[in-house]
Length: 598
Image (cartoon, rainbow, N blue to C red; front, side, top):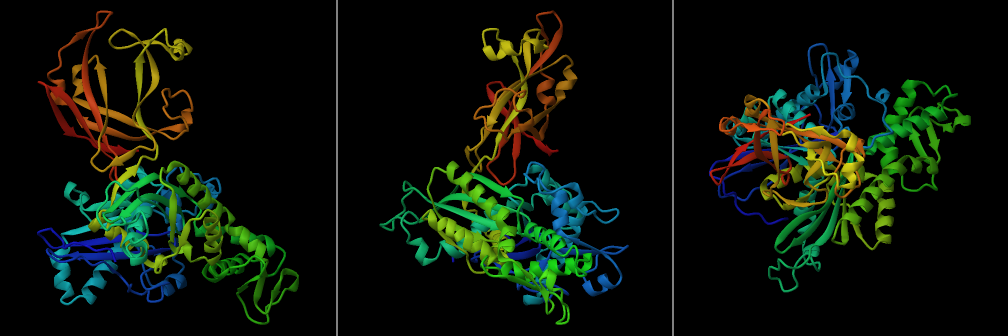
């Protein structure tokens, strides 16, 4: 296990981590006692879910009646309640920039009447919170007293797919409020910590795998003389978190003596998790049984569920047939390969169902391998989809052909992300992250008739507030894609805001754009317009500087006010932060800025 120091805080705290997955969810926790070495524990019992699919997991399913939520599945099915799986929520909450051509609006089942996706998410987190409370109260001595002493000092770590960005993080925070985890206050929000599933799984692998005696002695993971060697290069490590909805890949450079971990390539995310294999299987069964008496929607869905729970994970060889045992011995339809209550499927057909997911992982890995400056030598496979023997075998063959070690750690399905999320809060191992895209702002620039790019846009020239000719739709980069960023590192750009009305300068709103195209230094937003999108708006009260502005005269003689400010971004943590500053009397005056996601 990863050696940990005693907790240095002065007050006892509880850390709760929720890994809300597409098919299963998990909870891990840690009670931080001053002077004691932290120990991460999983929640292993859930009310009314004793047989939920693993000691540390619970199905990500809610049942809604006309009044609310009920976790008694038998009653829910008898009374015709609405069954809502996390697969539905994820499609409603997904990041819009993720490539998902295999999903159409018709694929997304509707939410219960009067509920939106964030409210459903909040309902499920409320249930998980109650499960955690019950488990701690029942498991620990004087558990009820323990909970009461900690309930106002709970730090929540909530995981999400690598591909989710600020808008999705905002929704998670709102769901935490709606679920009663925190109050909607600044102090309440400060107790919520968001983390990608990839980085959470990395912490799990470090704590349970990479810190083992065998790997910690691997060259480049530890210095040969046993002394700290900050100059030695790290080992390239990729963690593949294959879940029900997304495939998340994270790449790091790592040494363990001392422990130094840096992200070396932008995180990758593909919407090709195990539920999409099941969806493709449903389509295959529909087509195969379209003219059979067993091709009714209910029977096809029954077969699909059996495929999802057994056939999909047990499949190993495309040369062997696979079977779905769904009925009694008397159920037969030889023309459709049904005998003795079993449907026979071609191994080749079953293998094809996983191909888009396998290709997605390989494509994402190659993207990271090309971007990383460090050779990749270890790949770790975690998540519920990692239980697929066929998936593991195919990827193992691929990575072995590259001379890369590929492994699947124990307990990878049950609690990798949940345990890793708690470890992130305690150990905070990642010191650098990589920008996934280029941040910047749209702006206007003075027209330069000697610049070929300017002359090409001469028809767009306008008179600026100061009266000089200018061009619109220029792009000013603040942070470029692929930049290594430490948690406290700042990136800034100075802007001059000109307004005819002084009062308008009391508040600044700057749209932060993301460029997701291939150009290394985008300069104009009329090129690849679809590659630009607004990530967020940075807002700040600038009345203190506005009240001191002196009026200026434009070339044309009109009065205007000019305010020079610096927009500062802090993108190195798991959430984007911002500030605004300006010069006053030779000193920099800085104020925090609100980051509002669209």
